[in-house]
Image 1 (tube, rainbow, N blue to C red):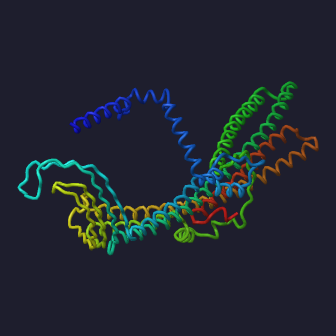
Image 2: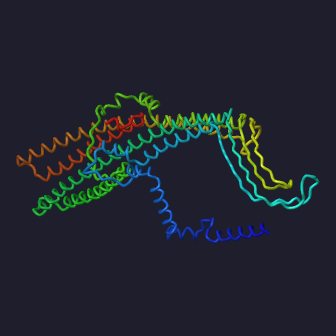
Image 3: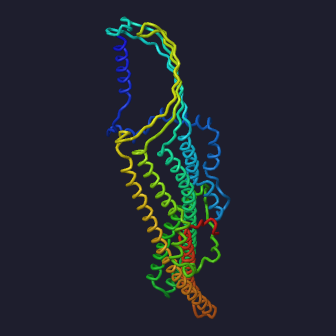
Length: 490
């Protein structure tokens, strides 16, 4: 009768649960989520639980201080300052640091796997036994209803377990992987901040140049309008200048939007509200890097210092240990020593009387896997494939870095050549502007012609600054690929 009652209660409970939940993402359910969002009551409970968890765990206070709300700097931000902010407040770097903590904890757990294992259990139960039929004279027919207490404590010590030994080696390798991954993450973020900062300076310079060009061309428009009224110029010249002003306005709007987007990216990367940037100083010895450092030298430096390549190499070692561990789990015997103490107190039994007993068992257990011991097939089959995959990933990373170093070296060379041409063109434009000014002073030219030439010179000046900063960006990528931390190069 009791069994039927329990079964009925279970059915009712399952039915009640089924009324309030569904296991399918139906179209109506998805549409309701998009229209109304998640149930606010459940969200309130989750928010309250998260707040209580934060209060109970005081250790998250330093995380809130480091990775919490933005702290706006005063005025424009310096590149060195932002790199320091990024290293302290970037959440990707923070998570990589937690990865080291996790690797340390997993290593400790792996060591625990080879230490003594102690467990205790106790069971207090009300037993109902009925002997219906038996040919054993010792048994008494009838029903016995009695309580019982069963308690045990067991100690086990692995004597030989090759799989656990490999687990310790694997944990040591994983800790190294976490450390290399942290260095790689820091260098990734430093390069991203560096490149974004320089790109923001390029956008800022472009905005400034376009603004000044528009002022000069507006002056030309006014001069041409006056000349048109005097019959000294045609409407076509004025219209052409106004079209040029409109075109500059479109470029200015686009470049201003790009500048603001880059500032937002810097804020995201550094954890501080960036409202402006300063012109960075060129690192000592930057120019001429493509002549002093060959592609082969940079690739050799990357092989020793690039953390992404080292991370892939650690992955190969980790894959090899996992392969060996899988072979050990599939074929290696496990020898374990154990000691067990069992206490049993029964008020009655089907033998007709109660008993109190205490058993002490000492022994050695040998387990030899023969075939499919875990019921999950042979682990070494997939582990071999994972090892080969890790090695291919290493080769792919090696090839990718070598290719990027080669292309960046060519980029340095091409940018240096473009910078030289831009500087030569700017010198020529400045000479023409100076010559035209002299003609204006002598009364042989007009000021609006000087304004037109100055607008071209401004664009040339902006191009020179652009290529200088573009060379800085290429240099930063070259250093980054070679495995050097850009924060230490400024």
